[in-house]
Every structure is written in C-alpha cells, then in structure tokens.
Length: 334
Ligand code: DP6
Image (cartoon, rainbow, N blue to C red; front, side, top):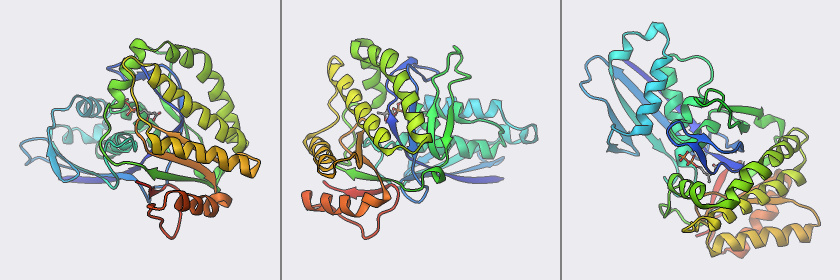
C-alpha cells in the first residue's frame, strides 16, 4: 500500500487564458500570466492511496463520491503513468482511491479547477515518482491548472508544437521577489457559475472576432510588458495591464454570440470604486480582475491594505472583514 498527499493553491490570472486551439490537448490560443496564492488559503488538498487489494478506482470530491470515468481525470492519470519511475512498475497495476477537497467554493469562478487539477497531478506525480516538468500534465486537466504547479508569478507559454510538449508553465519570479504584493478576493457570489469557462471559451473561439484580434495583436505585446513589470516590480504598469486585460476579456465575453455575462452590478461597482480610489490617490494603487464569474480579485501592495479594506467595509457594509489580511484572504461582500 502507498499513500501520498499534496496541496496546491489557486492562481489568479493577470493576463487571461481564454480560448483553445486544441480542445483535447488543452492548448491555448494565447500565453497567460498569473500569481499563485500562498498555500494557507484557497487551496485544494488531495490524498491518493494505491493498494493491491483495491478492486476499483474511486474518487471522492469534497466528501462525495464522483464518477471516476471522467475524461480529463483519466487523461491526467494516463500521462502521469506514462512517465512513472521504473521503480513504480508494480504500483502501476494497483487500483487507486483519490480523495480531494477544496477549502473554498467549487466552480464559482474562484479557480477551483486550477487548484484541483494542479493538486491531483502533483499527488499522482508523487505517487508514481515522476520527475521533471508536470505543468503540461496538469494542463490536460484544466488549462489554468498548469500555472498552479508553480508558486509566485507564473507564465503559461502557449507553445507551438502540435503535440503541446512546449505548452508549459514557467515561473517568472518566486513570491519572495515581490513580497509586498497582496491579493484580496471579494466574494460577490459563491453560486455555481452559469456558463462554464470551457463552454464559454469554445463559443468565443467560434464567434468572437475580438478574441482573434486580442490573441494575435494584443496579448503578445501585453505579456512582454507584464513580464517586465513583474521583473522590475513596477506596480503602476502591473496594475494597469491587469485591469486592461480583465476588461478586454469581459469585452470578448460580450462579443461572444450568444454572449456570456460573468460580471454583475456588484463586480462593476468594485471596478468603479477602484478607479475612483486610484484617482483620489493620484496613482494606481489597486488593480481589479474578474474571471468567469462575478467575484473580484484585487491586487495591491501591503502599504495599501488597511486603507482599501476599510474602504471596502464602508462601501459594502455587509462585508465580513477578518481582523488580519493576508495574501489571498477571501473577503465576503455578498
Ligand atoms: C477566465 O482553465 O477553467 O479563469 O481549460 O477549459 O478547464 P479549461 O478552462 P479554465 O479557464 C480559466 C479561464 C479564466 C482565465 C484564466 O485563469 O487565465
């Protein structure tokens, strides 16, 4: 019998991945960049047990048994097994039981699939003693999951090879490179999202001309600027590009036919609040970004945390404000 456990945190994109050029291999149409949260909050935890006495593969997600016969799960398992260490030859024939849980709402636009698949693949890789890059395997579970394999500031390079061998995530810098960087996740709603990212981006690729323009003409330039902003710790540029990219991603969602609406009135009021705050400060002190749901992630530096949290609690009086603010702590503003 062998048991392994791993954790993987959520990552929040500052340059969004939206659109695949290959649905099976999960190859994106553009590069993306994200920051991975610290492991204390919003992470997935997976334990896998392999035993010669198990008769079936089984999978529990958040304490409920789910069908093991899931294409993405099996793609990850097959890829990991292909790269198993020769030492694990016996283990390859044993059945496995997987137990995975998230400590935050699943499928509410809070990047749960990213943490979930990054964690699953890290645990499988530990079980079968896989060496080398595993981001391209995590990518087969959920595209954005490849970025949660690394900590800090991460760049998913779309790659050019048809088999996706070079579509991997690389670390631009560890979190310690910019230790003042903070995130606040504003939980506007923890309902399950209306349109999944997978189906939303498929419809965008099929119908949005703006997405074609974005992936070919805008993102390559933005990625260069963002890497530079991260390397030189230029918050003004980091924040501006983050907000512009979030806005363009949601513009693509509107340009999709039929359109996908992810942000709601509360998300939009946070956007307005951030712009008013930055104007009042005379500098870009906070950036917002929204994924495929109404929740808003704020990026800011440590020096701004107290003032911004006070402001949010004033403007959204129902906020549940914790007494201490850490990197990536969720704040409820429902
Ligand atoms: C808006 O990685 O969930 O969060 O590859 O189909 O599983 P699949 O999609 P997924 O899409 C994430 C989209 C996003 C932007 C991002 O994280 O870059």
